[in-house]
Image (cartoon, rainbow, N blue to C red; front, top):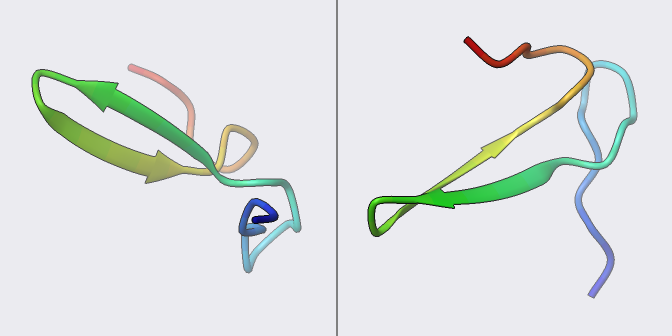
Length: 33
């Protein structure tokens, strides 16, 4: 299965798991805090 791409910039969306939850985000449009 191919990774989904960000609708804003086209960068592949990243899935990150933390504390039994998962988040999907664009590493280009959304910076880590």
